Image 1 (cartoon, rainbow, N blue to C red):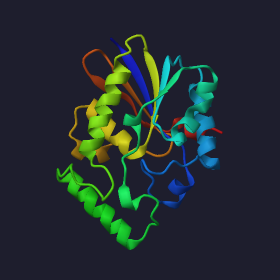
Image 2: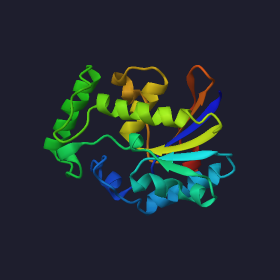
Image 3: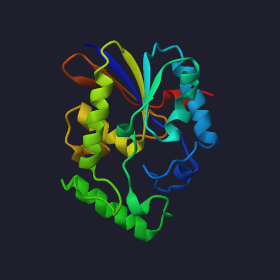
Image 4: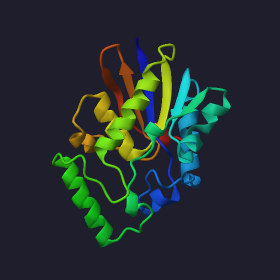
Length: 205
């Protein structure tokens, strides 16, 4: 089975713009810039023959690819594609204290402490479990040759580690911005990234 995955992060929200963390617990809308990014992505890829669309249960992912849904392409929400939950720090203003807390957590993750998490939040290992379930659902449909997946920044980094058999400690090796594209081809045995952190579509009005 050969399957091509177009994996994008959602468009910009006001919290993105303000540098405020939004995870699974913040169901925010796209802002004007995010809606522009959605239009730019659609214009660039509207001719792609997507068989199915998969999104998280957070509305910013659906808003980012709504033009494709409007074409009549079937879509499905999977909670496994939701963003990592940041717990007590979701929606908190960016301060020296919150920045220090995030820096400490990121260092723990890079050092291999992948069960570490904020109070009320999720760890990378917990996200991995639900992503494996989501991936199982997506890949079980062998008739779907090209699929569009819209998800979230940190979650996308973790998923790309899973697909490429990298340890989750290397999650930061996958840069991203709002509505950037990673194109991944599954050849029946392994996944290969054929378009890495692609933002070409965002350069055209």
